[in-house]
Image (cartoon, rainbow, N blue to C red; front, top):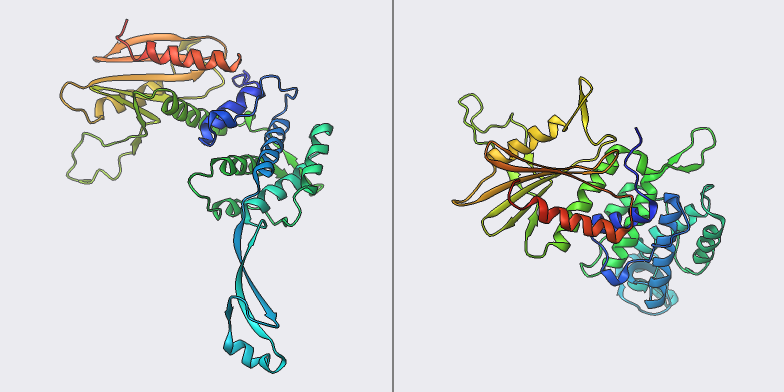
Length: 351
């Protein structure tokens, strides 16, 4: 069974929500995207983003410099200057900060463009755009890019657009593998990686609900076991419980688990069933969730649609539980509408 079908144009919207980076006005129109490969989508988004960034001006930062100068600039290192007999020649060793575009974020972006230009599967038209953009970023060095490079980046909280571009670079970096025979990078489409797609779907759904359901408080919630033990008084051996998504509004608490599978339902003796592990986990959350007097608890399991659609509601041990799928293989506005209608249906009274 194939993984849930997610057209590359829709994957862009999933990524934008999951990264929580862009304002609606900054979204790139991919509704008529001519490309079907993920590497082309990311390259296009990066190119459009870099052009937008260049038009409004590249971010600059101060970089520490040290130089022997015939004069004074910044702070003079008197001891080092004397040791090198510089004052006798009318010089001094100066340390100063200089404003430059050669910052770490810009270096990451240019390095990613450089690597993209060498990607063998990239669309030729996009490759020419990438190469042209590299030439349009003078004064910015390339670097040895690693996972730690992204961890070193510090951006102001308001700089959402740069953060978006760096997320694209990080996604590309994480998808490139080194071919052991040729030593060249090759791109691995993470749509074929169930674990990565499960994480993406969960993050997408969390931020989608946070942005779209303004009358609900949306968070991830740690839940403690309602348990006691003489041998393990701190319950340290019990597994931790943290919800994918918790919604609260007034006296209603909804716990949502987002799951990603190659089959909508599991099979038990050739009979279709809801994935039992998911249901057991959700019931544990509902049983142990902290609640105030009068709270109404609701549970939901949400899957991408694969081979069939689901809209099922149950009352299990007094808890309303909904199980539903969303079809990600349809126009984006239809996906958005389906999710909003699903939440209205799932958070209502059990059938």
